[in-house]
Image (cartoon, rainbow, N blue to C red; front, side, top):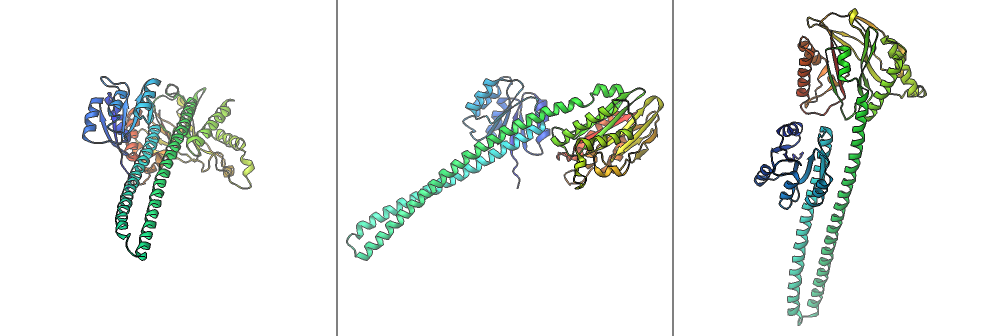
Length: 466
């Protein structure tokens, strides 16, 4: 049975309390307080496994609160949130108030979840070790009492048996040997107790090392996220080039294997959504490669979608040395692409796809699907069939949708996928609304369907209105 831990979160800003509770209420029992005084009153009524407190609060700071509970709640985990860098406060909290961890604001949900899980693993391990040590101590005391009582009885019997026969004397000797055995057993138990304490210290050191390494890795990935975000078109650039649109971009991990791309040319623009193999760090590296290659391909004026996909395919093969793996056919790195050349003044669109379709919803709410070439960029078997252009006439009020498979592949708590059918129903229902309203409704229904489940894949969804 999974343990549900309780968290008391203290912050003088009600918005921060609501955000934290919304993010973690399905995993933990969350209680909130707007001040240190309110938190102390709650602690008098019930115990908590963890206290998370903001540092800067009126009347009582986070450090003041930690001092107030230091002796009464020795085993409760403690975390400070601070919006500024105050080394003296943090050092004082670690050295004198048993602070486990501190976070600088704003915190990320993924990073916070990782740290909470590590904290409660350490908390549970310490709790189990305390229970085991208490049990061993109690057994040791019981054994020593038994040894004492037996020794006391033997001494008394010995006094009575001094005048008895040699047989009785031998019985007394056997009893004395048993006493020695009992003492040896008691010493063995004490040694086992010491061994367990040493193991506990080793585990605590190991958890500290893991925490430090995890923090270093997370910091590196967070910096990689900034690099990846720098290659994506800014909201201002998207608005200037394509006008009214909606965009949902949610990495499964901190960095993403999805990316969206745009290139402006005389009389129109190219726009694409690309889903690279994998997610996380490997997927992010593939996205950087794909972005770089696309920019190079269109640099000399190539704006033909099918030719761009063909050239991208060849360059991916060359870049990743796929030719070396032809005999073994073991290469599986590539990307799925939906690519369009849009000519706004001519009311037309040229589409080519690598395993990703294009959806069009007209002014009446009718949805048409344009099928892609059924091979991925970078896969060796893609060479067997060329990519093809499809020519689409556009009208005012039409909308087109480009997306990766992360949206339809998302599962809920019953392990059911959202699916293409449900996504089509959502799009048809909201297609006549403005992009801003449509975005808000689609995000709400997506999150409601997900119901707190982890992302199954990176999600990218781009809608454009004409």
